[in-house]
Structure formats: structure tokens, C-alpha cells
Length: 82
Image (cartoon, rainbow, N blue to C red; front, side, top):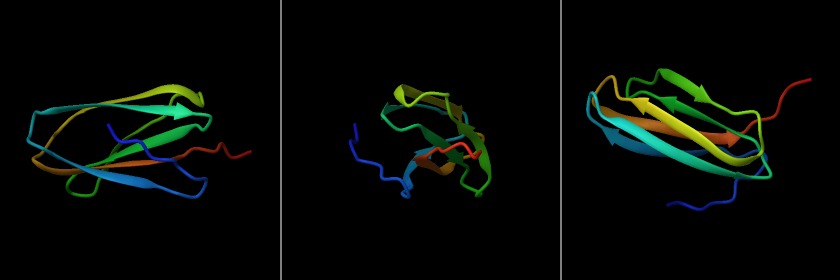
């Protein structure tokens, strides 16, 4: 468990070592701010962005490693452009 405050212009990044075929399951608890989570492969390709339309509660992330290496999990505030 990691607990950190996320400010308006911040992006937090975390690395996960995974082998091909392993799965990662993460839960990001949102408290008053909508967040988006990008999953970046070891080769630098964005695999997926996770974002549910809420600013409270859990944001669930689940993915399977397509290659062995360090996956970057990037969490940042999500603001819809008007």
C-alpha cells in the first residue's frame, strides 16, 4: 500500500517488474479528484489508459504482461477539456 497526495499538476510513476504472461491488479483510491492511470510497456508503448467517470472510490487497473520487463504505471489528475 502506498499513500500519497496527488496535486493538480503532478504525475506519479511507479515501476513493476513482470514476466510475460503475469498479471497485475491495482486499485487506486480516489478522494475528491478524478485520476487517470496509464500503463506503459517496457518498450515504452502505452498499453491502456484506465479512467472511470468519478472522483470518489476505486479506480481498478488490471493487465497482462505481453513481455518481460519493467512496466510504468503513471497516475495523474484527469480534467475533461471543455
